[in-house]
Image 1 (cartoon, rainbow, N blue to C red):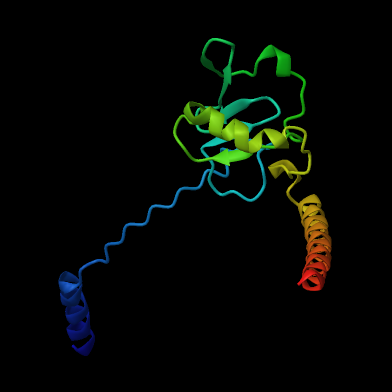
Image 2 (image 1 turned 135 degrees about the vertical axis):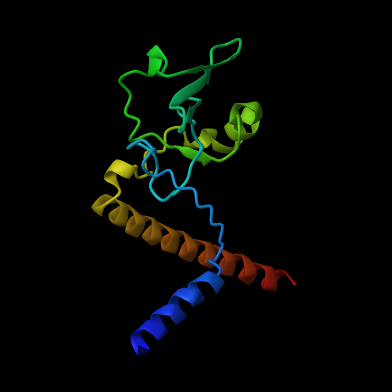
Amino acid sequence: MKKLFYAALFLGGLFFVKPAEAQVNVSFNIGLQPSWGPVGYDYARYYYMPEFDMYYDISSRHYTYYDGRRWISHSSIPRRYRGRDFHRTYKVVINESRPWRNHRHYYDRYHGYSRNYSQVAIRDGGRDYRRADKHYRKMEKKHYKQHRKMEKRWNKGRHHRD
């Protein structure tokens, strides 16, 4: 009798309990990104490749490039870039719709990276990524020390002039 009472109480309680409502929208497209994409991004809409002056739409897998008269989107790369190693070239992640409309901005900001082969691709994201990260930290530390040294030298010269 006791068990029946507790079972009825439990079932009766279920009718009064309101399920929790939560809306969580998390967007990950790691599985969609090509193996030559850069490491460290859980979401990317476009890649801009300064070396090729071309955009890659990750969701539709189309390349967008300027042919001299207009922007063209195509599922394959232009003939002049076939055989190039996309794992080595630098990619800029852009999460903006139709970034070629602001091409002048992206070109001015990133064209200096066109021969930069230091970025680690998703395919190589394991051991090599950690080694590259260690290298960058070492270089940043060296650069910081040089900057501090120059700053001290500049400040020392300033005090003598006063």
